[in-house]
Image (cartoon, rainbow, N blue to C red; front, side):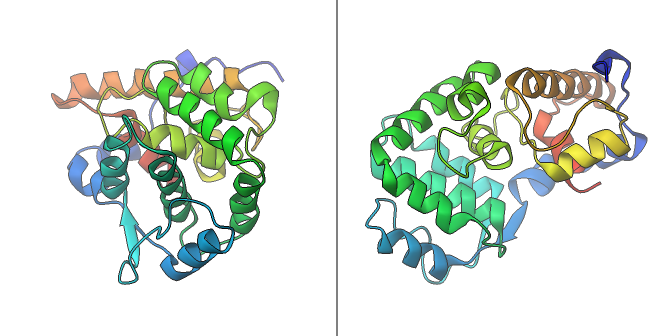
Length: 232
């Protein structure tokens, strides 16, 4: 199938209507329940840095919480970096813990390489989506086993700290389904997206965000569109 001409795709009306709501409500306040005890126990079991992932009384995490975590990573230690990873995974998984034990143990198998890949990705995330994505998906494979596009793009997204000009957005199966079925990106494919596709996706959201910024008279972040694509 030839690549879809993304310049012809229009943002669905329902998404445009959703953008009228405040950013703080839809983005910063987007909260997911997490299995704190499970994460704390699993990370401690393999003697990795970053535990506790959340306090015993913490039952949920918001996007805003993870933006604050990312803001503390400028000169962060390995422990802070891995805690950020665990918390992104916890938020992204919610109470569905499938494959997270494998992800944790993949880091435990080679923590030096895992931390190096994460550092490289986070450095690039605010400037170059292609380089950032390649850092965690070199040559179409996972730099960290079981950390595929759905979760690696969450890491890249949260590295942007919620800035309105951030370059990387989350791309997972739910977002992809809306892009294909509602927005008519016919050639998108599923799950194993190459770097070129991720860059096209981020560019599409950037175009839509600029168009909606002009319409609404306020700056729209690409994540405000991704939020609707995730759950229209």
